[in-house]
Image (cartoon, rainbow over all chains, first blue to last red; front, side, top):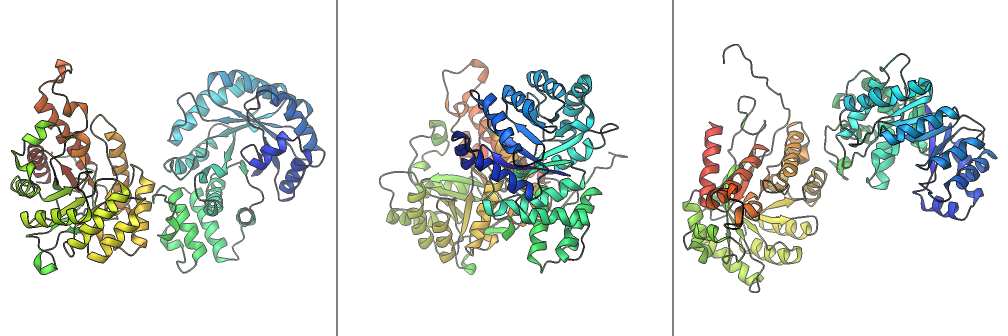
Length: 306
Length: 316
Protein backbone atom coordinates (compact mmCIF):
# COMPACT_ATOMS: atom_id res chain seq x y z
CA UNK A 1 0.00 0.00 0.00
CA UNK A 2 1.24 3.44 -0.94
CA UNK A 3 0.96 6.31 1.53
CA UNK A 4 0.04 9.70 0.13
CA UNK A 5 1.07 12.37 2.66
CA UNK A 6 -1.90 14.66 3.32
CA UNK A 7 -0.28 17.44 5.30
CA UNK A 8 -0.02 20.05 2.57
CA UNK A 9 -3.68 20.93 2.68
CA UNK A 10 -5.33 24.31 2.32
CA UNK A 11 -7.57 23.59 5.32
CA UNK A 12 -4.54 24.08 7.58
CA UNK A 13 -4.21 27.76 8.50
CA UNK A 14 -0.40 27.52 8.31
CA UNK A 15 -0.56 26.12 4.78
CA UNK A 16 -2.97 28.85 3.78
CA UNK A 17 -0.68 31.51 5.19
CA UNK A 18 2.43 30.06 3.54
CA UNK A 19 0.62 29.93 0.19
CA UNK A 20 -0.40 33.57 0.53
CA UNK A 21 3.18 34.55 1.40
CA UNK A 22 4.71 32.32 -1.28
CA UNK A 23 6.88 30.80 1.43
CA UNK A 24 8.40 27.84 -0.42
CA UNK A 25 10.67 26.97 2.53
CA UNK A 26 7.61 26.06 4.57
CA UNK A 27 6.41 23.62 1.92
CA UNK A 28 9.85 22.16 1.37
CA UNK A 29 10.22 21.43 5.07
CA UNK A 30 6.76 19.89 5.30
CA UNK A 31 7.48 17.79 2.21
CA UNK A 32 10.79 16.55 3.59
CA UNK A 33 9.26 15.68 6.94
CA UNK A 34 6.56 13.59 5.32
CA UNK A 35 8.88 11.75 2.98
CA UNK A 36 11.32 11.02 5.81
CA UNK A 37 8.39 9.60 7.79
CA UNK A 38 7.55 7.21 4.95
CA UNK A 39 5.23 9.00 2.50
CA UNK A 40 5.48 7.54 -1.00
CA UNK A 41 3.54 10.40 -2.59
CA UNK A 42 2.69 13.94 -1.48
CA UNK A 43 -0.75 15.46 -1.89
CA UNK A 44 -0.77 19.16 -2.79
CA UNK A 45 -4.18 20.54 -1.90
CA UNK A 46 -4.17 24.22 -2.82
CA UNK A 47 -7.94 24.73 -2.76
CA UNK A 48 -9.85 25.95 -5.84
CA UNK A 49 -7.51 28.97 -6.41
CA UNK A 50 -9.68 30.21 -9.23
CA UNK A 51 -7.50 33.24 -10.02
CA UNK A 52 -3.92 32.18 -9.53
CA UNK A 53 -4.04 28.38 -9.44
CA UNK A 54 -2.25 28.04 -12.77
CA UNK A 55 0.72 29.91 -11.28
CA UNK A 56 0.62 28.51 -7.74
CA UNK A 57 0.61 24.82 -8.68
CA UNK A 58 3.74 24.80 -10.92
CA UNK A 59 5.54 27.04 -8.41
CA UNK A 60 4.73 24.56 -5.65
CA UNK A 61 5.58 21.48 -7.73
CA UNK A 62 8.96 22.89 -8.75
CA UNK A 63 9.79 24.02 -5.23
CA UNK A 64 8.97 20.66 -3.69
CA UNK A 65 10.82 18.73 -6.37
CA UNK A 66 13.97 20.61 -5.36
CA UNK A 67 14.00 18.80 -2.01
CA UNK A 68 12.23 15.45 -2.44
CA UNK A 69 12.13 12.83 -5.15
CA UNK A 70 8.62 11.41 -4.83
CA UNK A 71 5.65 11.70 -7.21
CA UNK A 72 3.07 14.36 -6.43
CA UNK A 73 -0.72 14.37 -6.19
CA UNK A 74 -2.27 17.48 -7.69
CA UNK A 75 -5.34 18.21 -5.61
CA UNK A 76 -7.59 21.03 -6.78
CA UNK A 77 -10.81 21.47 -8.73
CA UNK A 78 -8.98 23.99 -10.94
CA UNK A 79 -8.06 22.05 -14.08
CA UNK A 80 -5.78 24.76 -15.47
CA UNK A 81 -3.77 24.59 -12.25
CA UNK A 82 -3.48 20.82 -12.59
CA UNK A 83 -2.34 21.07 -16.18
CA UNK A 84 0.38 23.61 -15.37
CA UNK A 85 1.52 21.36 -12.52
CA UNK A 86 1.63 18.32 -14.80
CA UNK A 87 3.82 20.22 -17.27
CA UNK A 88 6.62 20.73 -14.76
CA UNK A 89 6.35 17.49 -12.79
CA UNK A 90 9.35 15.11 -12.91
CA UNK A 91 7.46 11.93 -12.02
CA UNK A 92 4.11 10.46 -13.00
CA UNK A 93 1.55 12.50 -11.02
CA UNK A 94 -1.83 11.58 -9.60
CA UNK A 95 -4.74 13.88 -10.37
CA UNK A 96 -7.07 14.31 -7.40
CA UNK A 97 -9.82 13.97 -8.60
CA UNK A 98 -12.77 13.34 -10.89
CA UNK A 99 -16.26 12.31 -9.82
CA UNK A 100 -18.80 10.44 -11.92
CA UNK A 101 -20.55 13.66 -12.83
CA UNK A 102 -20.78 14.24 -16.55
CA UNK A 103 -18.95 17.55 -16.69
CA UNK A 104 -16.06 16.25 -14.59
CA UNK A 105 -15.77 13.03 -16.59
CA UNK A 106 -15.71 15.06 -19.80
CA UNK A 107 -12.67 17.10 -18.80
CA UNK A 108 -10.55 15.46 -16.08
CA UNK A 109 -9.79 11.97 -17.48
CA UNK A 110 -8.57 13.33 -20.86
CA UNK A 111 -6.05 15.45 -18.97
CA UNK A 112 -4.81 12.36 -17.16
CA UNK A 113 -4.47 10.58 -20.47
CA UNK A 114 -2.70 13.50 -22.15
CA UNK A 115 0.00 13.74 -19.47
CA UNK A 116 0.11 10.04 -18.58
CA UNK A 117 -1.04 10.78 -15.03
CA UNK A 118 -2.82 8.50 -12.61
CA UNK A 119 -6.35 9.53 -11.71
CA UNK A 120 -8.35 9.35 -8.50
CA UNK A 121 -12.01 8.76 -9.41
CA UNK A 122 -14.68 9.20 -6.74
CA UNK A 123 -17.76 6.99 -6.63
CA UNK A 124 -19.96 10.03 -6.41
CA UNK A 125 -22.55 11.01 -8.98
CA UNK A 126 -25.03 13.85 -9.25
CA UNK A 127 -27.16 12.53 -6.42
CA UNK A 128 -24.27 12.32 -3.97
CA UNK A 129 -22.64 9.38 -2.26
CA UNK A 130 -24.74 6.23 -1.91
CA UNK A 131 -24.61 4.38 1.39
CA UNK A 132 -24.38 0.83 0.11
CA UNK A 133 -21.15 -0.70 -1.14
CA UNK A 134 -22.91 -2.16 -4.18
CA UNK A 135 -24.25 1.18 -5.34
CA UNK A 136 -20.84 2.78 -4.97
CA UNK A 137 -19.21 0.00 -6.91
CA UNK A 138 -21.93 0.34 -9.55
CA UNK A 139 -20.91 3.96 -10.10
CA UNK A 140 -17.37 2.72 -10.75
CA UNK A 141 -18.58 -0.01 -13.09
CA UNK A 142 -21.03 2.15 -15.01
CA UNK A 143 -19.15 5.43 -15.31
CA UNK A 144 -15.60 5.54 -13.99
CA UNK A 145 -14.04 2.36 -15.36
CA UNK A 146 -15.70 2.59 -18.82
CA UNK A 147 -14.50 6.17 -19.18
CA UNK A 148 -10.92 5.13 -18.37
CA UNK A 149 -11.12 2.19 -20.77
CA UNK A 150 -12.52 4.44 -23.49
CA UNK A 151 -9.54 6.79 -23.16
CA UNK A 152 -6.99 4.02 -22.81
CA UNK A 153 -6.06 4.76 -19.21
CA UNK A 154 -4.74 1.46 -17.79
CA UNK A 155 -6.38 0.03 -14.67
CA UNK A 156 -3.14 0.39 -12.73
CA UNK A 157 -3.45 4.17 -13.20
CA UNK A 158 -7.12 4.40 -12.21
CA UNK A 159 -7.56 4.85 -8.44
CA UNK A 160 -11.20 4.32 -7.51
CA UNK A 161 -12.06 6.12 -4.27
CA UNK A 162 -15.30 4.99 -2.60
CA UNK A 163 -15.21 8.01 -0.26
CA UNK A 164 -14.59 7.60 3.44
CA UNK A 165 -17.13 9.49 5.55
CA UNK A 166 -17.03 10.27 9.24
CA UNK A 167 -18.10 7.81 11.91
CA UNK A 168 -19.55 10.81 13.72
CA UNK A 169 -22.70 11.42 11.74
CA UNK A 170 -22.33 9.08 8.76
CA UNK A 171 -21.65 5.93 10.73
CA UNK A 172 -23.65 3.64 8.44
CA UNK A 173 -21.22 4.51 5.62
CA UNK A 174 -18.17 3.17 7.49
CA UNK A 175 -18.61 -0.60 7.07
CA UNK A 176 -19.99 -0.08 3.55
CA UNK A 177 -16.84 1.71 2.45
CA UNK A 178 -14.77 -1.29 3.55
CA UNK A 179 -17.04 -3.59 1.55
CA UNK A 180 -16.80 -1.28 -1.45
CA UNK A 181 -13.01 -1.64 -1.49
CA UNK A 182 -13.36 -5.40 -1.17
CA UNK A 183 -15.78 -5.51 -4.12
CA UNK A 184 -13.69 -3.15 -6.24
CA UNK A 185 -10.72 -5.47 -5.96
CA UNK A 186 -12.90 -8.17 -7.54
CA UNK A 187 -14.14 -5.89 -10.33
CA UNK A 188 -12.43 -6.98 -13.52
CA UNK A 189 -9.13 -8.57 -14.42
CA UNK A 190 -7.04 -6.64 -13.74
CA UNK A 191 -9.17 -4.78 -11.19
CA UNK A 192 -8.74 -1.01 -10.73
CA UNK A 193 -6.57 0.42 -7.99
CA UNK A 194 -8.31 1.73 -4.87
CA UNK A 195 -7.74 4.86 -2.84
CA UNK A 196 -9.14 6.21 0.43
CA UNK A 197 -8.89 9.52 2.30
CA UNK A 198 -8.39 8.01 5.72
CA UNK A 199 -8.71 10.94 8.09
CA UNK A 200 -12.22 11.71 6.84
CA UNK A 201 -13.36 8.80 9.01
CA UNK A 202 -12.76 10.92 12.10
CA UNK A 203 -14.01 14.31 10.94
CA UNK A 204 -16.00 16.04 13.69
CA UNK A 205 -14.46 13.71 16.27
CA UNK A 206 -12.55 15.32 19.20
CA UNK A 207 -8.89 15.68 18.19
CA UNK A 208 -7.44 13.43 20.84
CA UNK A 209 -9.56 10.52 19.63
CA UNK A 210 -8.94 10.86 15.91
CA UNK A 211 -5.67 8.90 15.57
CA UNK A 212 -7.11 5.75 17.22
CA UNK A 213 -10.10 5.76 14.88
CA UNK A 214 -7.89 6.47 11.86
CA UNK A 215 -5.41 3.67 12.49
CA UNK A 216 -8.09 1.13 13.36
CA UNK A 217 -9.96 1.90 10.16
CA UNK A 218 -6.71 1.70 8.21
CA UNK A 219 -6.15 -1.87 9.43
CA UNK A 220 -9.61 -2.78 8.17
CA UNK A 221 -9.11 -1.07 4.80
CA UNK A 222 -5.73 -2.72 4.32
CA UNK A 223 -7.33 -6.07 5.04
CA UNK A 224 -9.63 -5.75 2.03
CA UNK A 225 -6.84 -4.71 -0.30
CA UNK A 226 -6.59 -0.91 -0.23
CA UNK A 227 -3.83 0.17 -2.64
CA UNK A 228 -3.35 3.88 -1.84
CA UNK A 229 -4.19 5.81 1.30
CA UNK A 230 -4.19 9.57 1.78
CA UNK A 231 -3.12 9.92 5.39
CA UNK A 232 -0.87 11.67 7.88
CA UNK A 233 2.52 9.96 7.55
CA UNK A 234 3.75 11.64 10.75
CA UNK A 235 1.38 9.58 12.91
CA UNK A 236 3.77 7.24 14.71
CA UNK A 237 1.21 4.82 16.09
CA UNK A 238 -0.43 4.52 12.69
CA UNK A 239 2.95 3.74 11.17
CA UNK A 240 3.46 1.15 13.87
CA UNK A 241 0.17 -0.56 12.92
CA UNK A 242 1.22 -0.60 9.27
CA UNK A 243 4.55 -2.13 10.28
CA UNK A 244 2.86 -4.79 12.40
CA UNK A 245 0.72 -5.79 9.43
CA UNK A 246 3.42 -5.73 6.77
CA UNK A 247 5.89 -7.65 8.95
CA UNK A 248 3.15 -9.76 10.56
CA UNK A 249 4.74 -8.95 13.90
CA UNK A 250 2.89 -11.00 16.52
CA UNK A 251 5.42 -10.40 19.29
CA UNK A 252 3.07 -8.23 21.39
CA UNK A 253 -0.48 -8.79 22.60
CA UNK A 254 -1.70 -5.64 20.86
CA UNK A 255 0.11 -6.69 17.67
CA UNK A 256 -1.68 -10.02 17.76
CA UNK A 257 -5.04 -8.26 18.08
CA UNK A 258 -4.18 -5.92 15.18
CA UNK A 259 -3.37 -8.98 13.07
CA UNK A 260 -6.57 -10.66 14.22
CA UNK A 261 -8.60 -7.60 13.19
CA UNK A 262 -6.80 -7.65 9.85
CA UNK A 263 -7.30 -11.37 9.24
CA UNK A 264 -10.92 -11.40 10.37
CA UNK A 265 -11.78 -8.38 8.23
CA UNK A 266 -10.06 -10.03 5.26
CA UNK A 267 -12.23 -13.11 5.85
CA UNK A 268 -15.41 -11.01 6.12
CA UNK A 269 -15.66 -11.59 9.87
CA UNK A 270 -15.71 -9.32 12.89
CA UNK A 271 -13.67 -9.13 16.08
CA UNK A 272 -15.61 -10.47 19.04
CA UNK A 273 -15.18 -10.04 22.78
CA UNK A 274 -13.45 -13.44 22.97
CA UNK A 275 -10.59 -12.10 20.85
CA UNK A 276 -9.80 -9.38 23.38
CA UNK A 277 -7.97 -9.35 26.71
CA UNK A 278 -10.32 -7.01 28.56
CA UNK A 279 -7.68 -6.21 31.17
CA UNK A 280 -5.54 -4.49 28.53
CA UNK A 281 -6.81 -0.95 27.88
CA UNK A 282 -5.13 -0.75 24.45
CA UNK A 283 -6.87 -3.90 23.28
CA UNK A 284 -10.21 -2.74 24.68
CA UNK A 285 -9.83 0.61 22.89
CA UNK A 286 -9.08 -1.13 19.60
CA UNK A 287 -12.05 -3.46 20.04
CA UNK A 288 -14.48 -0.64 20.91
CA UNK A 289 -13.25 1.35 17.96
CA UNK A 290 -13.76 -1.59 15.61
CA UNK A 291 -17.30 -1.94 16.98
CA UNK A 292 -18.19 1.64 16.12
CA UNK A 293 -16.59 1.24 12.68
CA UNK A 294 -18.68 -1.89 12.09
CA UNK A 295 -21.65 0.36 12.93
CA UNK A 296 -22.48 -2.19 15.59
CA UNK A 297 -22.39 0.24 18.52
CA UNK A 298 -23.54 3.83 18.05
CA UNK A 299 -20.69 6.35 17.99
CA UNK A 300 -20.60 9.04 20.64
CA UNK A 301 -17.72 11.25 21.76
CA UNK A 302 -17.62 9.10 24.92
CA UNK A 303 -17.67 5.71 23.24
CA UNK A 304 -14.42 4.59 24.87
CA UNK A 305 -15.83 5.16 28.34
CA UNK A 306 -18.82 2.85 27.98
CA UNK B 1 -50.60 -19.99 7.18
CA UNK B 2 -49.52 -23.57 6.69
CA UNK B 3 -46.21 -24.07 4.99
CA UNK B 4 -44.95 -20.56 5.59
CA UNK B 5 -42.34 -20.05 8.25
CA UNK B 6 -42.13 -16.51 9.58
CA UNK B 7 -38.49 -15.46 9.63
CA UNK B 8 -37.30 -14.56 13.12
CA UNK B 9 -34.51 -12.25 14.15
CA UNK B 10 -32.48 -13.35 17.15
CA UNK B 11 -31.56 -10.29 19.17
CA UNK B 12 -28.97 -10.39 21.94
CA UNK B 13 -29.96 -7.19 23.73
CA UNK B 14 -32.83 -6.08 25.93
CA UNK B 15 -34.31 -2.69 26.74
CA UNK B 16 -34.05 -1.91 30.45
CA UNK B 17 -37.21 -1.89 32.52
CA UNK B 18 -37.95 1.47 34.08
CA UNK B 19 -40.62 2.03 36.71
CA UNK B 20 -42.37 5.38 37.03
CA UNK B 21 -44.08 6.46 40.22
CA UNK B 22 -43.88 5.06 43.75
CA UNK B 23 -46.64 3.75 46.00
CA UNK B 24 -46.79 4.42 49.74
CA UNK B 25 -44.86 1.20 50.35
CA UNK B 26 -42.12 2.53 48.08
CA UNK B 27 -41.90 5.98 49.62
CA UNK B 28 -44.39 7.84 47.42
CA UNK B 29 -48.13 8.40 47.30
CA UNK B 30 -49.11 6.92 43.92
CA UNK B 31 -52.01 4.46 43.73
CA UNK B 32 -49.96 2.38 41.29
CA UNK B 33 -46.74 2.42 39.34
CA UNK B 34 -46.12 2.04 35.62
CA UNK B 35 -43.26 -0.02 34.23
CA UNK B 36 -42.09 0.36 30.65
CA UNK B 37 -39.32 -1.28 28.63
CA UNK B 38 -38.08 -4.84 28.93
CA UNK B 39 -38.50 -5.60 25.22
CA UNK B 40 -36.24 -8.10 23.52
CA UNK B 41 -37.68 -7.42 20.06
CA UNK B 42 -39.11 -4.66 17.90
CA UNK B 43 -42.61 -3.32 18.62
CA UNK B 44 -45.40 -5.90 18.61
CA UNK B 45 -43.27 -8.75 17.23
CA UNK B 46 -44.22 -11.04 20.09
CA UNK B 47 -43.49 -14.15 18.07
CA UNK B 48 -39.85 -13.09 18.09
CA UNK B 49 -39.18 -11.99 21.66
CA UNK B 50 -40.58 -10.64 24.89
CA UNK B 51 -42.68 -7.52 25.22
CA UNK B 52 -43.49 -7.52 28.94
CA UNK B 53 -45.12 -4.09 29.03
CA UNK B 54 -47.35 -2.40 26.46
CA UNK B 55 -46.50 1.19 25.48
CA UNK B 56 -47.88 3.63 28.08
CA UNK B 57 -49.98 6.68 27.29
CA UNK B 58 -49.57 9.94 29.16
CA UNK B 59 -52.05 12.79 28.93
CA UNK B 60 -50.63 16.30 29.01
CA UNK B 61 -52.18 18.72 31.49
CA UNK B 62 -51.19 22.34 32.07
CA UNK B 63 -51.12 24.49 35.19
CA UNK B 64 -53.32 27.00 33.29
CA UNK B 65 -55.38 26.48 30.13
CA UNK B 66 -52.85 27.22 27.40
CA UNK B 67 -53.68 30.13 25.15
CA UNK B 68 -52.16 28.51 22.06
CA UNK B 69 -54.20 25.30 22.00
CA UNK B 70 -57.00 25.03 19.43
CA UNK B 71 -60.49 25.38 20.92
CA UNK B 72 -61.30 21.83 19.81
CA UNK B 73 -58.68 20.47 22.15
CA UNK B 74 -59.75 22.54 25.17
CA UNK B 75 -63.42 21.71 24.61
CA UNK B 76 -62.67 18.00 24.54
CA UNK B 77 -61.91 18.17 28.27
CA UNK B 78 -65.28 19.72 29.02
CA UNK B 79 -64.19 22.55 31.28
CA UNK B 80 -61.66 20.53 33.24
CA UNK B 81 -58.79 22.50 31.70
CA UNK B 82 -59.76 25.46 33.91
CA UNK B 83 -58.26 23.70 36.90
CA UNK B 84 -55.15 21.57 36.78
CA UNK B 85 -56.42 19.18 39.48
CA UNK B 86 -59.68 18.61 37.60
CA UNK B 87 -57.74 18.14 34.39
CA UNK B 88 -55.52 15.50 35.97
CA UNK B 89 -58.61 13.70 37.32
CA UNK B 90 -60.24 13.82 33.90
CA UNK B 91 -57.08 12.39 32.32
CA UNK B 92 -57.14 9.50 34.76
CA UNK B 93 -60.86 8.96 34.16
CA UNK B 94 -60.24 8.94 30.40
CA UNK B 95 -57.88 6.01 30.87
CA UNK B 96 -54.40 7.56 30.86
CA UNK B 97 -51.54 5.54 32.36
CA UNK B 98 -49.60 8.65 33.28
CA UNK B 99 -50.21 12.35 33.76
CA UNK B 100 -47.72 14.67 32.06
CA UNK B 101 -47.88 17.97 33.94
CA UNK B 102 -46.41 20.80 31.97
CA UNK B 103 -45.91 24.32 33.21
CA UNK B 104 -46.73 27.20 30.89
CA UNK B 105 -44.16 29.91 30.41
CA UNK B 106 -46.20 32.49 32.29
CA UNK B 107 -45.56 35.41 34.63
CA UNK B 108 -46.88 33.62 37.66
CA UNK B 109 -44.55 30.65 37.22
CA UNK B 110 -42.12 30.51 40.12
CA UNK B 111 -40.67 27.84 42.38
CA UNK B 112 -43.36 28.25 45.12
CA UNK B 113 -46.11 28.24 42.51
CA UNK B 114 -44.72 25.08 40.91
CA UNK B 115 -44.66 23.36 44.30
CA UNK B 116 -48.26 24.27 44.94
CA UNK B 117 -49.40 23.05 41.51
CA UNK B 118 -47.52 19.79 41.94
CA UNK B 119 -49.15 19.18 45.34
CA UNK B 120 -52.59 19.72 43.86
CA UNK B 121 -51.96 17.34 40.99
CA UNK B 122 -50.47 14.68 43.27
CA UNK B 123 -53.57 14.75 45.43
CA UNK B 124 -55.99 14.79 42.48
CA UNK B 125 -54.65 11.67 40.76
CA UNK B 126 -53.05 8.41 41.79
CA UNK B 127 -51.18 8.05 38.48
CA UNK B 128 -47.40 8.48 38.21
CA UNK B 129 -46.35 11.87 36.87
CA UNK B 130 -44.05 13.20 34.24
CA UNK B 131 -43.30 16.89 34.89
CA UNK B 132 -42.13 19.24 32.16
CA UNK B 133 -40.86 22.75 32.78
CA UNK B 134 -41.73 25.62 30.46
CA UNK B 135 -39.01 24.58 28.03
CA UNK B 136 -36.33 27.19 28.63
CA UNK B 137 -33.25 25.71 30.25
CA UNK B 138 -32.76 28.28 33.05
CA UNK B 139 -36.42 28.43 33.91
CA UNK B 140 -36.75 24.66 33.71
CA UNK B 141 -33.96 24.38 36.25
CA UNK B 142 -35.71 26.66 38.73
CA UNK B 143 -39.08 24.94 38.34
CA UNK B 144 -37.86 21.35 38.21
CA UNK B 145 -35.54 21.66 41.21
CA UNK B 146 -38.49 22.90 43.28
CA UNK B 147 -40.73 20.15 41.87
CA UNK B 148 -38.12 17.50 42.62
CA UNK B 149 -37.90 18.59 46.24
CA UNK B 150 -41.65 18.93 46.69
CA UNK B 151 -42.30 15.51 45.15
CA UNK B 152 -39.52 13.72 46.99
CA UNK B 153 -39.79 9.95 46.68
CA UNK B 154 -42.53 9.99 44.01
CA UNK B 155 -40.28 8.73 41.21
CA UNK B 156 -41.40 11.58 38.98
CA UNK B 157 -39.92 11.88 35.50
CA UNK B 158 -38.27 15.32 35.30
CA UNK B 159 -38.14 16.84 31.85
CA UNK B 160 -36.71 17.98 29.78
CA UNK B 161 -33.20 17.16 30.73
CA UNK B 162 -30.98 18.26 27.86
CA UNK B 163 -27.35 18.98 27.18
CA UNK B 164 -27.69 22.58 28.40
CA UNK B 165 -29.11 21.81 31.82
CA UNK B 166 -28.68 18.13 32.52
CA UNK B 167 -26.34 18.67 35.47
CA UNK B 168 -28.93 20.57 37.48
CA UNK B 169 -31.82 18.27 36.60
CA UNK B 170 -29.83 15.09 37.23
CA UNK B 171 -28.60 16.44 40.57
CA UNK B 172 -32.22 17.12 41.57
CA UNK B 173 -33.28 13.64 40.46
CA UNK B 174 -30.40 12.08 42.40
CA UNK B 175 -31.18 14.03 45.56
CA UNK B 176 -34.89 13.28 45.62
CA UNK B 177 -35.32 9.85 44.04
CA UNK B 178 -36.65 10.81 40.60
CA UNK B 179 -36.12 9.88 36.95
CA UNK B 180 -35.14 12.12 34.05
CA UNK B 181 -36.40 12.57 30.50
CA UNK B 182 -33.14 12.83 28.52
CA UNK B 183 -33.90 14.82 25.39
CA UNK B 184 -31.55 15.18 22.42
CA UNK B 185 -32.35 16.88 19.13
CA UNK B 186 -33.20 13.97 16.77
CA UNK B 187 -29.67 12.60 16.59
CA UNK B 188 -28.61 9.09 17.55
CA UNK B 189 -25.09 10.08 18.55
CA UNK B 190 -26.23 12.93 20.78
CA UNK B 191 -28.98 10.80 22.35
CA UNK B 192 -26.52 8.17 23.39
CA UNK B 193 -23.94 10.74 24.47
CA UNK B 194 -26.46 12.44 26.78
CA UNK B 195 -27.32 9.08 28.37
CA UNK B 196 -23.63 8.54 29.05
CA UNK B 197 -23.18 12.01 30.54
CA UNK B 198 -26.21 11.55 32.80
CA UNK B 199 -25.09 8.12 33.87
CA UNK B 200 -21.60 9.50 34.59
CA UNK B 201 -23.15 11.76 37.22
CA UNK B 202 -24.23 8.67 39.11
CA UNK B 203 -27.88 8.35 38.08
CA UNK B 204 -28.62 4.64 37.57
CA UNK B 205 -29.52 3.79 33.98
CA UNK B 206 -32.83 2.44 35.28
CA UNK B 207 -33.81 6.02 36.05
CA UNK B 208 -33.23 7.46 32.58
CA UNK B 209 -35.87 7.66 29.88
CA UNK B 210 -34.64 8.64 26.46
CA UNK B 211 -36.48 11.37 24.60
CA UNK B 212 -35.17 11.44 21.03
CA UNK B 213 -37.47 14.35 20.00
CA UNK B 214 -39.86 13.94 17.13
CA UNK B 215 -41.85 15.68 14.45
CA UNK B 216 -45.49 15.38 13.48
CA UNK B 217 -46.88 13.52 10.52
CA UNK B 218 -45.85 15.57 7.50
CA UNK B 219 -43.42 17.64 9.56
CA UNK B 220 -40.33 15.52 9.92
CA UNK B 221 -41.79 12.38 11.48
CA UNK B 222 -39.63 10.28 9.16
CA UNK B 223 -36.49 11.70 10.75
CA UNK B 224 -37.78 11.04 14.24
CA UNK B 225 -38.89 7.58 13.20
CA UNK B 226 -35.47 6.71 11.75
CA UNK B 227 -33.62 7.94 14.81
CA UNK B 228 -35.83 5.90 17.14
CA UNK B 229 -35.62 2.83 14.97
CA UNK B 230 -31.83 3.13 14.85
CA UNK B 231 -31.59 3.55 18.62
CA UNK B 232 -33.86 0.59 19.25
CA UNK B 233 -32.05 -1.70 16.84
CA UNK B 234 -28.75 -0.72 18.49
CA UNK B 235 -30.29 -1.54 21.88
CA UNK B 236 -31.41 -4.96 20.69
CA UNK B 237 -27.95 -5.57 19.22
CA UNK B 238 -26.45 -5.03 22.66
CA UNK B 239 -25.41 -1.34 22.68
CA UNK B 240 -25.93 -0.84 26.41
CA UNK B 241 -26.23 2.95 26.52
CA UNK B 242 -29.17 2.86 24.11
CA UNK B 243 -31.07 0.19 26.04
CA UNK B 244 -33.51 2.68 27.54
CA UNK B 245 -37.24 3.13 27.08
CA UNK B 246 -38.19 6.05 24.83
CA UNK B 247 -40.68 8.84 25.50
CA UNK B 248 -41.97 11.11 22.74
CA UNK B 249 -44.50 13.93 22.59
CA UNK B 250 -46.64 13.38 19.49
CA UNK B 251 -49.48 15.41 21.01
CA UNK B 252 -47.39 18.53 21.20
CA UNK B 253 -46.07 18.04 17.67
CA UNK B 254 -49.37 17.11 16.03
CA UNK B 255 -51.37 19.97 17.53
CA UNK B 256 -48.84 22.47 16.21
CA UNK B 257 -49.56 21.56 12.61
CA UNK B 258 -51.85 23.51 10.31
CA UNK B 259 -53.80 20.31 9.66
CA UNK B 260 -54.74 20.09 13.34
CA UNK B 261 -55.38 23.81 13.81
CA UNK B 262 -57.07 25.20 10.72
CA UNK B 263 -60.84 24.68 10.75
CA UNK B 264 -61.35 27.09 7.85
CA UNK B 265 -59.52 28.43 4.84
CA UNK B 266 -58.06 25.09 3.78
CA UNK B 267 -58.86 23.02 0.67
CA UNK B 268 -62.12 21.09 0.82
CA UNK B 269 -60.14 17.93 0.11
CA UNK B 270 -58.69 18.16 3.62
CA UNK B 271 -62.08 17.00 4.87
CA UNK B 272 -63.79 17.39 8.21
CA UNK B 273 -61.69 19.43 10.62
CA UNK B 274 -62.41 17.54 13.82
CA UNK B 275 -61.72 14.15 12.26
CA UNK B 276 -58.60 15.41 10.58
CA UNK B 277 -57.16 17.04 13.69
CA UNK B 278 -57.63 13.97 15.85
CA UNK B 279 -56.36 11.71 13.08
CA UNK B 280 -53.19 13.78 12.96
CA UNK B 281 -52.42 13.11 16.60
CA UNK B 282 -53.45 9.44 16.40
CA UNK B 283 -51.37 8.72 13.31
CA UNK B 284 -48.34 10.57 14.64
CA UNK B 285 -48.49 8.64 17.91
CA UNK B 286 -49.21 5.26 16.31
CA UNK B 287 -46.33 5.66 13.91
CA UNK B 288 -43.91 6.50 16.70
CA UNK B 289 -45.07 3.53 18.75
CA UNK B 290 -44.16 1.38 15.77
CA UNK B 291 -40.66 2.82 15.81
CA UNK B 292 -40.19 1.90 19.47
CA UNK B 293 -41.84 4.58 21.65
CA UNK B 294 -42.55 3.22 25.13
CA UNK B 295 -44.39 6.33 26.31
CA UNK B 296 -46.39 8.73 24.15
CA UNK B 297 -47.67 12.02 25.53
CA UNK B 298 -51.06 12.86 24.02
CA UNK B 299 -53.53 15.71 24.35
CA UNK B 300 -56.99 14.64 23.13
CA UNK B 301 -59.09 12.01 24.97
CA UNK B 302 -60.30 10.52 21.69
CA UNK B 303 -56.69 10.06 20.56
CA UNK B 304 -56.04 8.26 23.83
CA UNK B 305 -58.92 5.88 23.15
CA UNK B 306 -57.84 5.14 19.61
CA UNK B 307 -54.15 4.71 20.31
CA UNK B 308 -55.06 2.43 23.22
CA UNK B 309 -57.31 0.37 20.93
CA UNK B 310 -54.44 -0.02 18.47
CA UNK B 311 -52.03 -1.11 21.19
CA UNK B 312 -54.52 -3.62 22.59
CA UNK B 313 -55.32 -5.05 19.18
CA UNK B 314 -51.65 -5.52 18.29
CA UNK B 315 -50.32 -6.65 21.63
CA UNK B 316 -52.85 -9.53 21.62
